[in-house]
Amino acid sequence: MNCQQLKSRLIAYEELMRFNMVGGLLLLWPQMWALWLASNGSPDPGWIAIFAIGAILMHSAGCIANDYADRGFDIHVTRTKSRPLAAGTVSAPEAFTLMALSCLICFLLVLPRLTPLFMAFTALALVVAFSYPFAKRFFPLPQAWLGLAFGLGIPMAWVAETGHTSIDTWILVIANIFWVLAYDTEYAMVDRPDDLKIGIRTSAITFGRHDVLAVMCCYGISFALIAWVGLNAGLGIVFLAALFIALLFAGHHYTLIRNRESEGCMKAFSQNNWVGMTIFAGIALDYLLRGLLPHIVKLTPV
Image 1 (cartoon, helix red, strand yellow):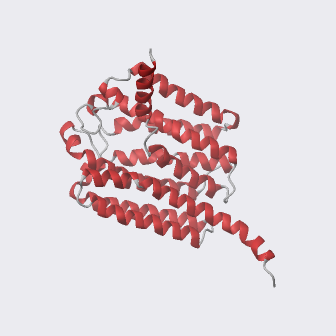
Image 2 (tube, rainbow, N blue to C red):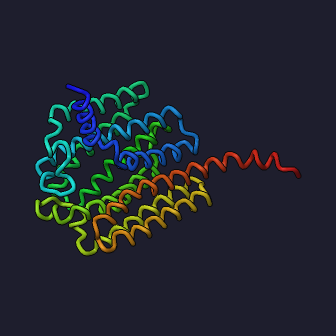
Image 3 (cartoon, rainbow, N blue to C red):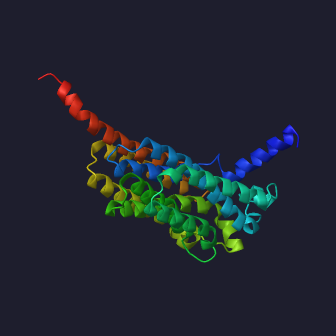
């Protein structure tokens, strides 16, 4: 294999594993929310690194599983027909090897810190994630199933920091499900004409002409639940300001998706990385300022 062939092969692997997409970050942000909330703003740096690397690698593993399951459908969809497995530029054994390596690296990262409860949530997350591609065959809202798959990183993060879960953990999971349902419906709106032809079920098809309204409602429910968790944790004005900015992003998404044009829907989907990051910044900064305030007060002259 010469250098040019090696370069082409590596590019195909990158496309298969989606290192150039926002999906890994969309998986990461809710886990970061959970680490900060569970630890009252002081998460273990080791867990931060583990979840950051794990989110990217497990998203890649999930994408490989999804592309393998959908390879027969992807060749009929304009946006996905050039994906490596559908186009034949990467073989199934190569794909499975990459998926296994991603999972193995993640396992080795958490191995020194494994607890029975953490292992249980990890196993559940793997089952839900790898069954997601098949949910599209029968479940009318597979985006909600994806939301659960992405959301199970939240109790994993909570258990990592505290050893247990709480009611706030599960409220945050539900919030994440609605958030994913919102942004992945935007994503599904791009492929709706092709999905109708090949018989794939998506939330964009299920919601029909009410799709835009459904997306906006899902954003509203998600942000309301996140606000509940944050306020219950004692967060204040900085957190609420960040959540308001996230709400403005959602309002902008309405202008992008209301005409149901592919370019606008894809742009709205991609901007959800900024939504997740904004919420995380609000949580982290609020905790930081709460920690600094007593020291500022002590230094202030009477």
